Image (cartoon, rainbow, N blue to C red; front, side, top):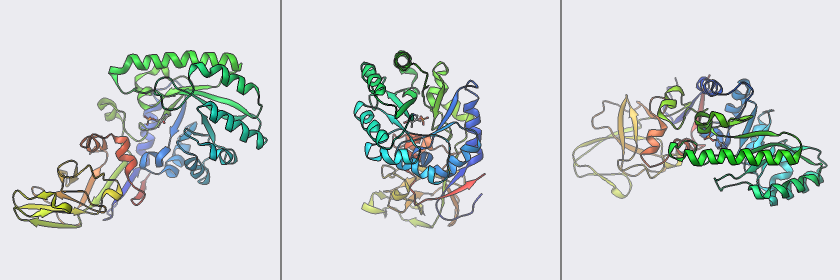
Length: 368
Ligand SMILES: *Cc1c(COP(=O)(O)O)cnc(C)c1O
């Protein structure tokens, strides 16, 4: 392991392999695996992670935005890349870089057809997104007829997949809602396929959908957070390995006297003599300013040190009064032993947000 004093994000690619293997073991052999690598592969590093995933035989990639797909193509990724949230201004470059758009509304469908025809495309792959209750993006069932009619007017595009997205697949209390979504997608996709006269790939499960609704795996699953080591469930989390460790070190130790203040706005006033450690990581690195003043903690020599006072842009101070430590000692913000989920929970957030918040200023170090 690295002895760097700087703040670094270590990415364990063997843990990535472990997680992919675990999740694949939950699938039927003919179910395809789409790896979601949006947002820098959940805050890690999209190109290194995607390159490694290509060696692990994933079938598909997905990103949120066109620019993320371009970055993967620039890095030499050759597998198909679904762009989940493309915007019409990027349709030309989507085609130029062989990216595959999610088409989620009539407006977007019409615009994509216009661009594909202008670029003289034939059977360009598109993915039709249906809204079954998340109410975020997607066609509804009443639009199927018009979508089919529109598709009949052109040879420029061809439907490669039909998909939908579950709203609460991690929540046992919303099982009825989820089962309804699954049923709705079944009838929507059947109706659409009847009209198309061929069978595109069908998919609707994210990580918790994969784990909780095996009957809904269909032809492909879209896995994000699970690959990075979180399963939205304590039992599953034991089987997965978080791939990212955010670590830093102690820059300086102070002993502040009872009644003295610490940090900006004097938000922390020492109730007794207090030993604090200053760390080179702040809100510009991804430590949200909702942390601080007792919310959130780091680990030093295995012990929990609460974040004291306000989070600064480039630093936090932690209370180490009862922790044997010295300047230069390693500090773990989160990692396999100290869950990002727990740290995120201290500000009512989730692993997804904390992981994707680690800013590009933090150096990524890879372990194979
Ligand atoms: C982000 C995303 C996923 C991945 O979800 P996880 O919960 O991280 O597995 C799957 N599908 C869509 C449409 C997404 O936006």
